Image 1 (cartoon, rainbow, N blue to C red):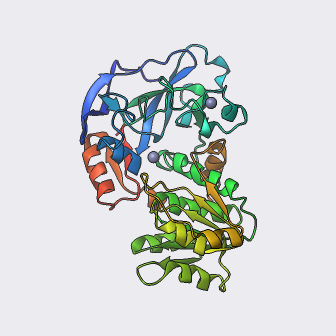
Image 2 (cartoon, rainbow, N blue to C red):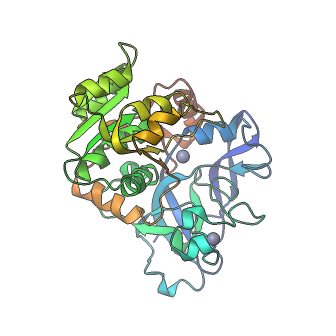
Image 3 (cartoon, rainbow, N blue to C red):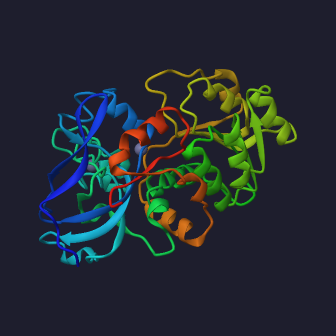
Length: 355
Ligand SMILES: [Zn+2]
Ligand SMILES: [Zn+2]
């Protein structure tokens, strides 16, 4: 076991607009908490919005702040009262961003992603209202940690957060063997969604997007692609399903205009699941088609009870991550990582704080 230093490097949000790599004290684990050495931390659109002040006053509640919520690491020290956690120093782990309050009706029913206390002052949403993992170390309650096997490397493990969201989406949509699916929006979420849909039994997966990302979708198992710059995406999905439409559309686009297209792409009695957020913009629902085709509209938030399944899918080799985690950065180069995210040249920049 290596000794734990007093200070660590961290990407600090001291003022909105940019991050400074600075040294701050290594956090100490309190009762029930664990100190984790961060191995890999992915950067997402929400991080970019937080850095640019898109949620100021809420995420984070005050400055300076350490962001980062899609990450993996290795247990470095156990705090008091963690004996029953099943964790040991050296275990490789991934972290959920909260585990709910365990007391409200939603938490009690197992839907802790919908915890009713999440907006209460003092509620720790790690990387948003409590310190994130874009640093050499992070402290988390043992209960939010999941062990990862050797077969899942550090960068792949940093995708568990987003992958588990797609597992939750597949469960919400009740995907079954032989299902037909369309995925709108081949960003990281969509590229994981199409693979999780296939692993859940879907035999037709049509990805709707544009440009090079569609080639990647094909490489990762999409059975057909529709380029919306080349023609009407709804017609494209209908053509690929003999005119019938798909059982389920997963909207990973974050584009409010896609909702109507998703509804148009769904067969009678099918479902549309929304995973992508629009930043408050409204989409339009073609009301008659929606009612007369008896469609189900499913919201998908976070990933309750889905981390273990995503970890298993990665370990089994059913989900490929190599092409999704190719862009890696040292912590000192975090500004370059954000620039790549902003320019959309990287699907998921991965920062390696230990390198
Ligand atoms: Zn994220
Ligand atoms: Zn709760």
